[in-house]
Length: 168
Image 1 (cartoon, rainbow, N blue to C red):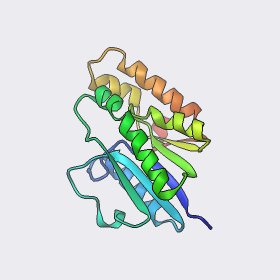
Image 2 (cartoon, rainbow, N blue to C red):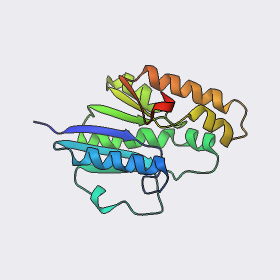
Image 3 (cartoon, rainbow, N blue to C red):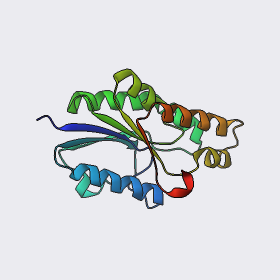
């Protein structure tokens, strides 16, 4: 039986200490421990090393450019690297059986790629991204862009999962 290849688009530094970082790191750990799973993590480059337990033969980490202060510009700038990372993952582990996507402004390509390749996508919602983006940038319309990204991801996902009840 061929191992199941799952691609996780995290868009957060999984070596960090905030709630979203810890959540993503623990999800990666849980998936990597599953028998027969090959996991590709696509996430921003970190200054800290990956935890040892995530350096396993069944885990491939593809680093996107490190996050910059301007969320909107960073989100747009990493799309090419996201596509390149997915191509490398497919070449290494074969076609994925599914994509897991954390809802972030940067999550532009995963829903489109999921649709084009007929790969099921699961969307993880960890917070009120449209509101958060609006508070973190002075770019007019950033919240509307985030709302559009959220809608695109939701309609292209086979399942949407909320991290806690208040965001459902």
